[in-house]
Length: 361
Image (spheres, rainbow, N blue to C red):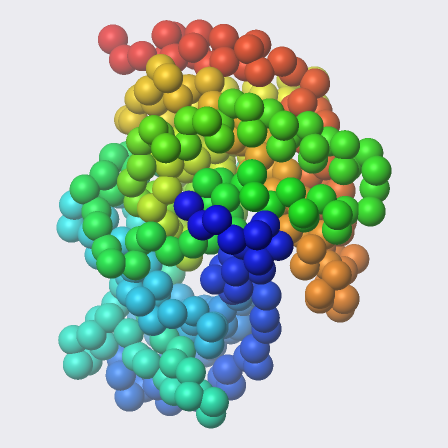
């Protein structure tokens, strides 16, 4: 682990995660020309709102595609990692509904674009996966379990995957969470700061001493309800797994923790209800080690807290989006408080109970 001063580590992580800078959006006519030349594709481009890159939906007469242009400060090797993960899943687990990468007419996976200042951006074309994002549905326990099982299947398929860039560092990687306490200073509400300090204390006591022994592999990194497409009428429920932009090598337990962080508090009377259903499904495909299961609730709380803290940090630097960002942070703090009201031991007991009744046979 890096032993640089905490402030320096935070800045490095934000820069490597593409959250410390902005760029001028690429012109639509440039994308049109590249698609025609390298993919023999033409149609109507619709710009989609995204966090870092330029993303478009391309509507053609025969099919829709997703067109992504990486930000100037994202290394070409990192984009190659994301593409390689999708290629690996297409080969190793072709039955999984993950996105596919379309080849150029030259047989490549992408088109490099050199900017005026010498940086290289990467254009890729992916298939457009139809479906409703999980976040806009009201899943029942069975459907939540199916969503969890799908992540377990993805993680299982990625177990053997290796790539030269998979050791990338991201601010979202919970391996670095304990070194980001300074983010608390950017949170104006004293009650929120107290919540954050309590979560950092839990993480420092429960997870940090175990970091060196946790099972690691390449993980999706952002299996959130906005990156899971579903169809309630489909027996499989999950119809698409998208956005491998946060793919990295990290502790395996941190992958379901991302999903749990997004489910906490959505049922106020029982804030861990949906999370427990998700984990039960995940373990059908990828059982969690008995020694690591107790760390999962703490990791989920850390991820949700981190998202709220990063939102405040970004709100200071992107004033035009401040109100939008802080509105979402308020929901996160409410859910952290709700989830913290339940003792970790009780949550682990419920996870173990759910494991027993969900086991096949």
